[in-house]
Image (cartoon, rainbow, N blue to C red; front, side, top):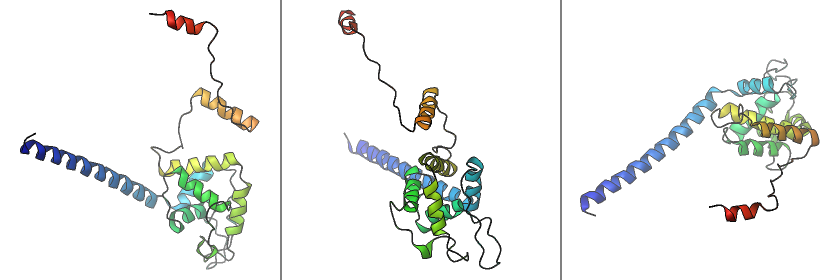
Length: 200
């Protein structure tokens, strides 16, 4: 290869790397912009619309006003904890699972002094929030993770992911029996292997 060809190839590689980096930074920037636009209270309302059975835990008293802080709910505090205290990304299921694991005492210990509401409410809501999360079923926690991921990452999230009929049937069976029943593999019938050998 001559010198001119080498230079063109190097320019092509550098251009490709630059495009990859640009794509990465644009994705990160879009996620940050979306996260800034979605306040914890807005996200909480979206979650409660989809899962009205979730406890709101919004009976705590505002320290400044002495009134009940209705907007300060379990989910809004969880979002604040996830996003601002732990600085975890909002668009990935694994990160939300880590946050839930914190509440369940299975991952990191939640610092009471840094927990959302600890300085603005008359009583720190941490213990009540941990108990509320503990009372959720595994299915409810899974749905909550899917909803939160879908709100922040609507393109790749699980908020409106269509289910195939077999997935829907399997999910129903799993909920009814409490077990994950994978589909049974199809077994070959006697003599089918010989047919393969005889076919052209």
